[in-house]
Image (cartoon, rainbow, N blue to C red; front, side):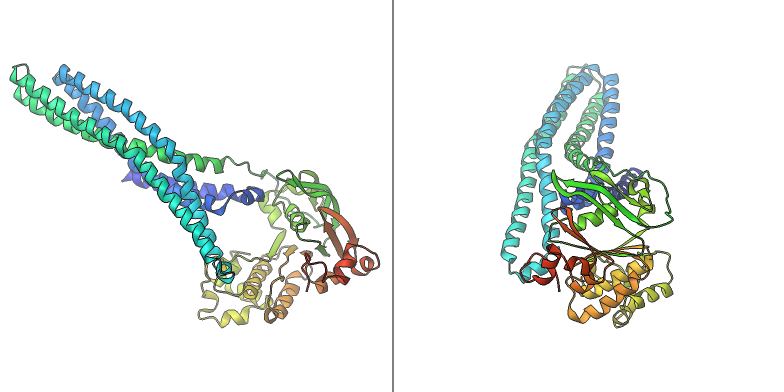
Length: 498
């Protein structure tokens, strides 16, 4: 019982450890690694590993100790039977190695199939709206069926690899019991063994080989979970960003990018960018899709580390900051908002967990979401579905803004936060953003001309470089990408404008 509880506690501790480790990995890791892989490792594989390992360790230890003690007793009672017992045990362990190697060969395929199936199921569930909208259910069903079929085949293959060999192991154990029983009877009949010893030897033989058979079966399972442990270790071995910085509280929030370059998978995304963003000013970043706009904001907040150059906040390199002290300076409102499966009040409190209910309501009112929250059956105690599935896009955006208002960070990064908002929510959302951004440093990835027009500076990014920079009127006075963006927006199909 204690071992079982210890095993589950170990798994729980490992999950927490993985969660802490993932927190400090560069964003590139999450781009390269599927959600299914991470989910499968931290849930299914880790649970199976803990469950099987706990039981296997108990049974293998029990079988080994029982075998050792009883074998020693048989030697003491009768050396001849003891030697037969040792010979059979050696044969068993040699064959057990073949079984384990056979199982070990199919274990990676089994675990990979499990991981892929989890990934496809997650993708199917998360994309169900788009799947229905574009009537691609049959195509996605085919992918799901293929993943399930692969998992089924991998499971069957693992069983086929193990069952015959495990069956032979079982046969060896049963035959060994029969051989020792026969030898004991023969020794008794020829007068070289007492009847009590004969009966004892037969009982001991069946005790030994029953325990040994069970232990042998679980050693094969240990080989399978060994591959699961390898996958857990792979995640833990991914190099974290340097998080051993200082607790820095800058006197100002001026941001400076100095000859910053960044590449992803050998493809240059940002190329020698130098940019100043003064405290309490608004900077609009515009440019064609894929030009590097979001990457610049990610480098400023140190979601990634620069390849060359440096990013400073308050005159200090962002790499000098501890992770937590750097994040204290930023609030983000993304185009795609994620809400946790919790109450609306708690989702707003993520900005400041210790906040009172009065603070939550005040933030919601500033974010223009108090009225719609109160119209819900349980008000602020309404539990939203995972990802905020029970709310509209505009409602989720306003709750995200309330969360950012609650945090009250000095720098606000808006990543196309109103790009896909319906007209009914636009007025409330615009007012919410105005309340959020008062007296703040604002960096917005711009998509609407009216928000760009009033920025203190407009930065035009194309192919990872700053190609234009200035105020709206200044840029309109020049022939360049920005003027084409404004005057020829119907032709510029890759630009998001309203």
